[in-house]
Image (tube, rainbow, N blue to C red):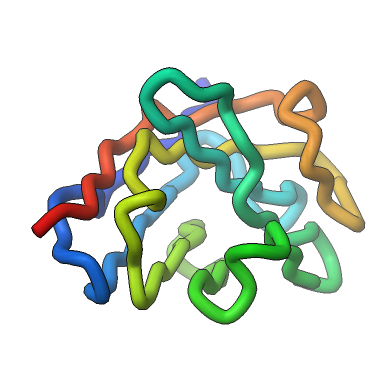
Length: 125
């Protein structure tokens, strides 16, 4: 079976940093683009970032450029989302998702076939 297992969420103070992990099992990330989405309470799920399949090109929601960084470690079949200078608006449940052979990757959640379980991120003092 194909799974994405997330880890790394938690509580962080404003201005702090956090790194989320998304580990794939049952398939190799070489052939999948990975996207990150988040959902704040009372809001719809929104696209955060993605990394494409072959070229490893990265994309970010405009307002997050410079604060978030997506990367992948193919040897460990894991994708990371590093978040810096965090603000309270970054609070929400974060999800990773896999889209086969996507290059470039997309912001459309309907294109993603496999989803992680979600991890809570809370930015609060």
